[in-house]
Length: 102
Image 1: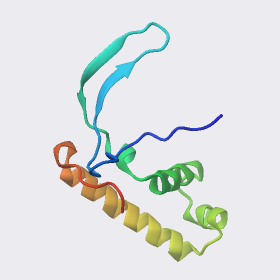
Image 2: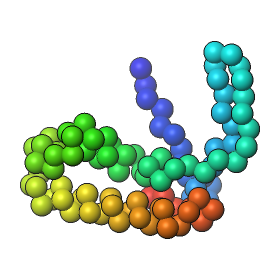
Image 3: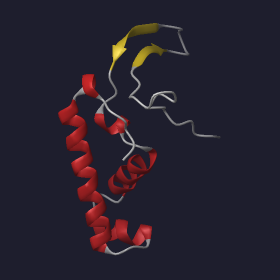
């Protein structure tokens, strides 16, 4: 099975995309509107993967460092950068989403 990644940036201009329709494949119900992506969904794929591994390691930076084959300070620096990125995304708010690649 191939995992499709949710596109978060316009391939033309690089600005953040917004969700405008949800669809239930079981009953064919559709919901339309203008829904901003939450901050975690606006992270790039590498950042999302790091968050996933962080949660799966129960937040253990030592375990995460072992899994990535890097030092604890390297993982700590990466986490700090991710925290800063999430703060930027939250501060920007959904109406001012900029280019999501860091």
